[in-house]
Image (cartoon, rainbow, N blue to C red; front, side, top):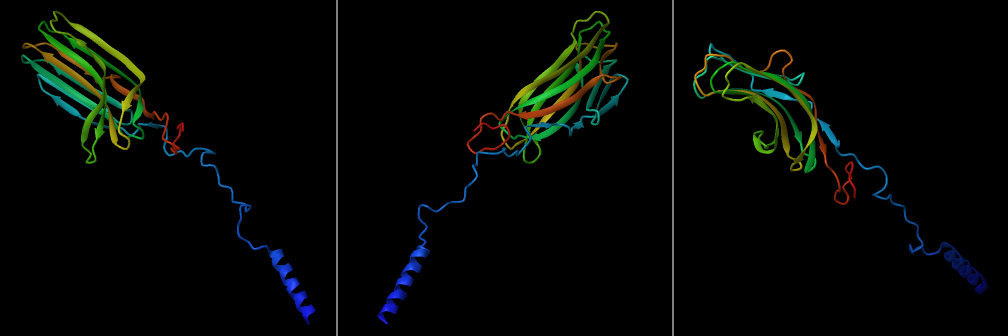
Length: 251
């Protein structure tokens, strides 16, 4: 009987030894985890956005025997037009007509480049013998848009064109304006805020004395005006904080 008990105890000891008491020691294998820095970076926004959804304003169509003022925009062709004409002007009178093309965007980074490709054309004419001036102006600017939709501070402004006929004229003078710009402008922004890029075309006349002759700023008829070929914002991503996986980041 004692021999049978010893055999049973021996068999139980062998069985326990073969099972090994699983304590989860240092030799246990772990499931490999992917390297967070490997593989393709996650694209969270485009590095460059095209400003194609333009709006316009300041449509004017006024005319009298003394003066005319006209401005309009064509959103589909991204064209702005303006014109001012004086036939009879009072001393010190200034006549102006403006048109605007605008596009809104959200800042994805604190610094960016506004790429602008546009052209403009106009004709200035004066046929008086008194002091007068006529100008065609093209201005590019960027302004903040507040949470309520109103305009905030101006963060960028560049006068691309300011050409005209000066005062003290003694005979008829005609000046043709025809130019373009295709370059980038640096912007300093606040990430996450809304901004509005705006192109302004202005025709402006000023007569110092009473005039009975023609003064004209024509950026309206035929193929005159301002045409936006393209406009885009490129984010200057550069070196990013650790863990930032946006396109172009260098960690």
